[in-house]
Length: 263
Image 1 (tube, one colour):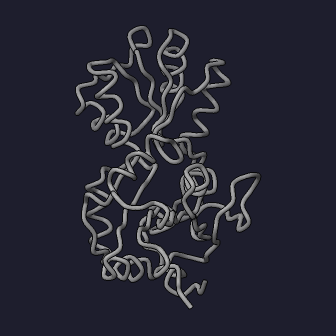
Image 2 (image 1 turned 60 degrees about the horizontal axis):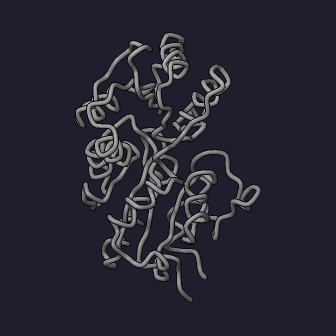
């Protein structure tokens, strides 16, 4: 009988909660990824997390024994940067996000501002330094007509000790505060992220498998674009049979089951 690692020719991995959690690799994630590479299969890592650059993630993964290339990693910052540089060059923005994220957006020649009267775009993502001042700058910018975008919509982010608030929780607070709705987001499960995956993999996605720990992003991406998916139990709260209309093709204890799960 085949295993999942043999059935599929391309693998789309989430990072946080799937390959690692906090600062620790999921057991045997390195073994699994390296075996996929040895078999000559295509692989890509996609993350909604914006608190590091793709180089940061590459350095972390490679230092933990994964034999991968930096161009096999995409996060929602990369997708958002491409959109903003093409659509809103030299625009003034404010971000609820950490310095790494703000620096990356500024590198595309957008201009950071904390003046609600001149902010043209509000960007929301994970921010572990979030405070009331940032929320009020964001709210006043929206009330003054700023566009409302998000790098990701995850409600929480998995860490070693559990979960922390992520962009989705901040978006909800701002929507209630201002009665303005989020216009667009650029991480999983958006079409923007899907197009980036297609361009990077350059493979038949009918033979691809998405592996992740979160129904509303990872598994929803697969459901939305007709790609098989596997839900792992190593990240956020686990619903093996899915919720509502979002259901995985497979449910696994961890990524290592890709090598063991008989089909």
